[in-house]
Length: 263
Image (tube, rainbow, N blue to C red; front, top):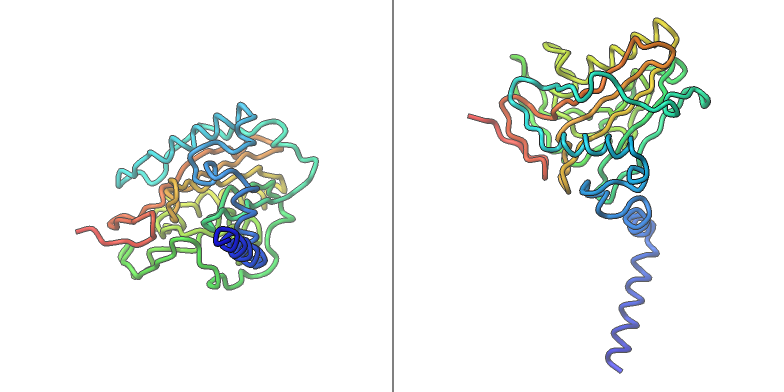
């Protein structure tokens, strides 16, 4: 009798838990979006398991997780040119953008796009301070001789390319050095975003674009950002690079987002 009563109470509790919308979405995300191992970044996603090029891409992403910033080279070249498939470069659907659902830790995933002039913003950027990406534990620092903040709400696909504002699927905790180092632009995302934006504005052509946040296991802050771009109508723009999410002079705890200044 006691066992039956306990079972009944347990079933009632589970029912009440699942009735809550946020709890239902959490369970749905864990069991349907991807298997748990792939969400923890320790196995390939189902799509990548069935695609040779996807496997190669995933292998490179895994290798990037083991890379360590040497204190000098914030950017490393993954491939000398982007390696999109013919299907991925198709313009049949015109310009488009696609963002991954947040995983069970509320972390962002891969962002894909076929960039064109019609996706670019026509209005000023809006306030995005309402978004608190995972690992957001910000602080004031000195960078390039000026007071700044350690972290930015970094876009996977920059506002100037997509017009995306406070899109939680497009913003992550990125260091100032990764996001926009205006004293050395080539070491940060803004350089590559500007390159693509300038090309599209001047030619009216399209650029296939993909940005992959590289997480280790259950860490809340990305280790780095892999950026891939290929102009479709010509070969003027083609890169596949990785930018470390590090900040010179600071040690970052990627599991929590906390940080400390190095002596």
